[in-house]
Structures are given as C-alpha cells and as structure tokens.
Image (cartoon, rainbow, N blue to C red; front, side, top):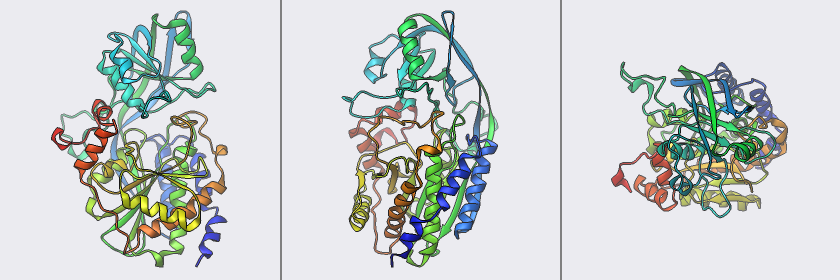
Length: 454
C-alpha cells in the first residue's frame, strides 16, 4: 500500500506546526516561550493520534541576555553575548587568532589578552572545531575574554553557548551546590559579525579593548515532550528533536524544522500504526542549545538496552537531500541504504561520529543513533544561530519529501526482524580518538569515559 505517500506529500501538519513555533517568539531554554512551544508540540502530537502525550519537567540553570558592548578606541562595536557567558567585563589587548586552530592557541601568548576567533575552519583542516572547543582553548591559555567572529557575511553576529555542560542533574545536587554557577563559563564571551570582526582585526589587533557582558543567571525549568505509538513493547525506537532555540531568532531551521518533522512523522505513523512492530516514542527535548540538557536528563533515566535505535532530527529541511550521520553503526547505514534504494532517492550517510546534538547522550554509551540533517556544502551553521534563521528560507516541499523517507525508515527500524547491534562504549571512545575528537571533548569537559576506557 502506497496511499500513505500521497497523504504525507499533501499534508500540512508539520509545516503548520513549524509556523506555530516560529510565531511564539523566543524559545530560549528555560523561558516561557520554550514551555509554550513544548505545550504546543505535546498538543500537536496528541492531535496526530499518539497516546500519552505529556511533558516531563526538570531544573536547569537559566541564562537571560542583557546588554553587551565592545569598546575599542573611541568606538563602540556591535556584539551579542554568548549564552552561559558570565556577567562580567574584561579590559585587555585584543589578539586576532584567525581560525583559532589548536596550534594557533599553542603558538600565541594569550595570558591576560582577549582572544578573537572565526566560526569556521580552513578547507585544509580535517574536522570542524566547535565554538566551545575554541572557547576553552582560550580559557586554558589564560585569556580574559573571548570574541567569536562569524564567517558568514551579512552583519550577523552569531550566538551559541559556552561554558560547560551541567555536571549533575538537579536532583543529585546537595544543598551546598550552587545551580547558578555550575555550567557558566570562566570568561566573558560575545559574538560579532564577520564585518565587525574584520574591523576589529584591522584597527585594534594588539590594542586594548573593553568587553562587557550583562546577563541574569539563576534557576529555571525546562521540559521534554513525550508521546508514543505502536505496540506496548519494552523495546522502542526514539524519534527525537529539540524544541528550544536561541533567543535572537525564530529558530526555524534550528530546530523548529526538526520538531515539525517529528510531528509530521507522528501523523504519518499514526496512519500506519499497524505496520509498527516495535513501540515508537517521540521526544522533543528542551534545553539542547545550552548543553544537551534535556536529552542528558532523559538518557540518565532510561534503560539504554531497551532503545533499538534513535532518529534524531536536528538540521532537516534546510536542503532537499537528507544526510544521516550513522556513528559507525553498520545496521543504521544499511537501513538508510535500503530506504534510498526503495525510493531511488539519494540519502547521504556519514559513518563518522558527531557529538553535537541530542542523540549523543545515548550514542556515547553505544546506543544506535542517527543525527538526521540535510546535506550542505557550507562549513558551520550558515544562517543558524543568527537573526537570519527564519522560516522563509525553508520549503514545505522539502519537509514533505524528507518525511516520506523518514516515515519508512522508522517503520523499517521498528520491524521485528530489524536489528542494529549496540556498540561498546570502549569502541566509541576509540573512534573519538581516531577521528581527532577526543582532545576537543576533554578540553570542554565533555569526555565521559574513564581515561582507561580508550
């Protein structure tokens, strides 16, 4: 039966939900807007025909943006604070480190300086360097402040969290612990546009500047959205996204589109529920953008052995072709290839590890998980994490086409005969070493293994 394909291709369920999310306003972790988005997503999943649609709340460290400023010479340069920056100021000479590769930090005296780095890496470098990795290289080398310069032109200062992940869940803290300070970074951090960064490098490299960050920091609450379809089996397939977004934009691509996809898949799978041989659990996480907090909360409370596979949607719809990071799970790659062949439609598979989204709190312990994105020739996030992440850059056609492929992929994974072997955490740790990701995770405090695990 293929009637369902036409139903998905003419559906407006997912796109309507995307419009709902972007029209809320800020969906920053811990905000009223994030909670409204979670409630709307719960209701949309219930309307799609899922059962037990609900919210699960948890405590987080909240961060609310205040004013920020860079004073250089007699000028004031536009900037925005990076979430989890401390509310602080630094006055020191500016050092432009260009791309901010590890060698750049090793070769430069940053003690008592303010470091500025680009948001991309050069073509010759073999991997992407996350913002937090560059931030902690600056911290480790004695910098007093951090300036993150967008490589995408258009007067778009980038945002994105710094600081560390929450070291413990809220219910494991003692009375002496301070939730306000746990994940906050050590030095003030701001984002500047490509143009402002070029101006700072041209006019003020080596000159004293002042960097000021204001922010309100304190306890807050986030929540995960859960719902289910299919038989009531112990084993399940997780279909996930994150509902929060940075406060400076609509968060259409990152990650309104991913949550819209989860709702669209729920709608399609509800019509095919008899085809599901394993329970499918839909989860829209909160507080992803400030350290994968919602998915970590879920992973710490879930039987990993009961999870058959994870289909995590974060970066879909931005381009017509799906890209699935498979993290070395051969069974995930085989399932994606099966769907691509069935529809004679390209699906890119990337066998490397990708430790930056809500699949990772599970995958790091060997649970099979995809990071589902769109293909891109760009380095970094493009419009993401800027004011320009808006809905008119996406197309309903792309959401529908990708939803058809992902619907059948979930049905494939939920089949009784479908098996994807879990991996040993030691093997994941070894791959992180081999793919030059381990040192970056260590410097950010994200290395989860005992040093003997690799």
